[in-house]
Length: 319
Image (tube, rainbow, N blue to C red; front, side):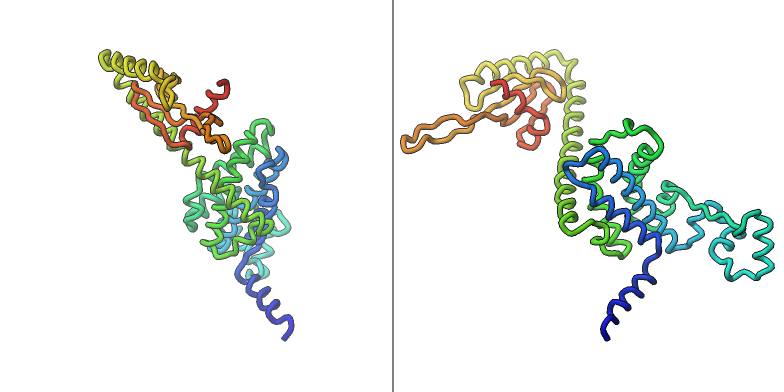
């Protein structure tokens, strides 16, 4: 029959989703619509609020599905039966409860806030448990926008946080909790864009952690070596020798402050060449940093992503 499929789908939706989940998806869609690489400060503020709302409602949805009582600020027996089961109470008990409470409904409907919702939901969701640190930071950012002055929020960091984490988090929770991830995004194009941006920023973040660990390791090595005067003298001689031959060699060697130990390091610079038409004459089209070595702490950097991270090519702009 015409319309039967739609009616069936609507019925399934009603029995498999609680209102908290419907609200969560609504807020997540609103957040996704704001996310882009050219966000205004207002966009960032609004996206923080909507993402925070979405995660809070999603956590409450999890708790509601396990036991609605876990949502209540006052989960005691007398209050919880008034909130959720007043229709099952005998009239005399319901009337007495209303009279004793001094409220028309005889109940306290207040529910727990965001952080309490997260901590409780983490008992039932691995996705929430694994991201509890992320959600704690989100809660803090939302609190800044909602309750403190906006200047206390680092807008650039907040934008990066949103763009890096929104897509992987909502897609993981959708897979775990059994709803369609498509419902979390403004449209398919936005979902694809956010997936691409998340992958790019995650790669950058992983590189940052790797480089910070590398620099820290070699700084510690320098601290252990600097008291050895023979070693320090040898490092100075080897550095001077490399730099003395650098201008006439390929690659060239230039002095550069080591990003790990702050001693004099050797930065290797190579040239890009091209060929001039039929003459076959070569000419330099540009120069770039090929690597860096420090004889004092042992740091060696040759990967182009690592040299870019350390901004070594910026030192060539004045050449």
